[in-house]
Length: 127
Image (cartoon, rainbow, N blue to C red; front, side):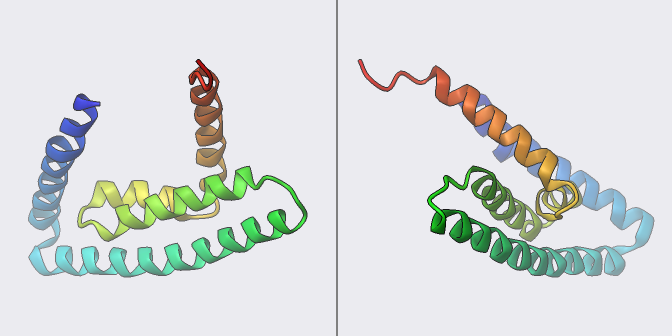
């Protein structure tokens, strides 16, 4: 857990700063700034749109008495992707768009459901 925290709090911001500096050198400071603002706005739009669709799918499956595993995975990915898209940087934006866009999210949600099932099978519920 400590290693993950170190990566999230130290390595990811350092890589993002490096990417922003490179983009600023190649594009200039104002185009880089505008690109960051545009990706943040697009990310907020897509996160709201896809999050609403995921919540409707969850309600639909619950109304028929089914466990909405796939829509819940989609909602988790849209939420995490929206957070990544609001953070300034290009690498987090790329990962955020992969999580939010409906074309790439099914692959990630399948992987997330597989990982959760594998994790939950290893958890001891009763001792």
